[in-house]
Image 1 (spheres, one colour):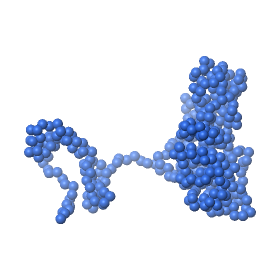
Image 2 (tube, helix red, strand yellow):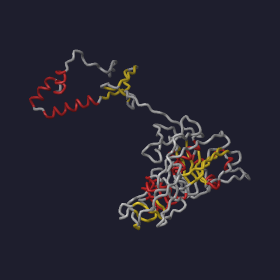
Image 3 (cartoon, one colour):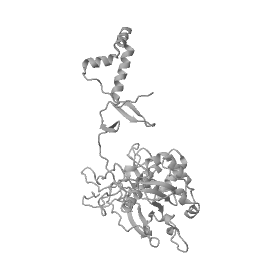
Image 4 (cartoon, helix red, strand yellow):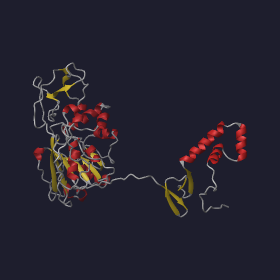
Amino acid sequence: MEVVSSNLQIDGPVEGGLYTGRRLPRAEKYALHGVINGFIPNDREPRGRAWIHCSAPSMWTCAAPALGFTVRGVNVNCDGFMALLECMDQAPEKRVPQGVSQGVLRRQNLEDRLGEVQVVFTDYAALPDYSRSRVSYWDKPYWQVPHVLYVEPKLMPLQPPPEWSSLDLRLSHLHLGGSTTATWGLVALLPPSFPSCVPYNLPPQPWMPMHSRLNRMVGGDITAPPSAARQIDHPQVQFDDATGGVTTDGLFPHDNLAVKVVAPDDNSDTGFVFRPLTWQEKAALWDVPIRMVDEAGKRDDFVPIVEALFVTPPAKFLELGADALLSAVFRGGYSKVKKSKKRVRVMEGDESIIGGNKKIRKEKNSGGLMEERESKKIRKKKKRSRVTEASETMPQKRKRLEDGGSLVENSFEEKHPTTSPPATLDKHPISHP
């Protein structure tokens, strides 16, 4: 296995970097494949609204919010997928009918329902054709926004609509930090008003062996430990000589979902079992969010919906790949937040005094009047006074009332005598009739 070299560079604009904050992997002695490196910005400006229109459920609904877009509407030809998103608290802002073509939706005033959108996430099957026999989809001003879609590598390079331009990336799940052999293409179609630009060159990320995604308590047919792994320069699918199953120290074949694996198992006498993967394990291999897996596990009708995602790109493709395509198109932005002491503004007449140690603050209430609010220190002092009053005897209470003060206040004044009278807050008292 190769350790990621430290001399890799990211092509493209350096300032700001990728929106997701992903950077070059860091080489460490204890990490065979390197360590994922990057940062999570404290505050990121939103990049706009997104319309997701696909021929089937896809991970665009999870990748778009991670890229800073607000999902305005979704049409993936599946009502059950929309119900699953609602259970995840990720429902789009607007509901549109499912299983309806883009042309029918446009005739139903889709533009008025969605409002302004800045990007469209789609797939090749749902992409409107390029026909120019009449005013086409691509000529309408409303849809003159970037369209990002995933395609099979055999369809690349994809020709853009007339007068449009395109950016494309061919990505491997292995180089994105995944555990499968999947390879997909991502294409960004840019309208004529957008200047041409170059996508970022994503650096290879540390990959994860298949066994890191598996559950060691599933069970299965007990089998002997797999044959020793062959020394290879590039991670790939490896097979066991005895069973013919796939060993878990390599990659999972994305185009053979029913294949059996020689999986580690804690309940097996030999430490291994021969079995197919569960749908939850395949979801982990496809980078499906944990929340989606948890919600699907509560309802049997959600399981086939998650399984339909296994013929689409894993989530890492859509998130990191679209980030590389759109970082030069939608700059977004990073805003570093500096930590500072919390300061309280106290208003006195026409003057403003800033300070954090005021005992009493004046703030405007909803009626525009000034009201006094006591600090926590004074409230605690009054609470101690009430507790002391409740426990005092009748002679003590009579003496306190004659003296005109509380026991706590008297004891405080005796310990800390003062020569100046207490200051008043109202410099200009208002007299009422």
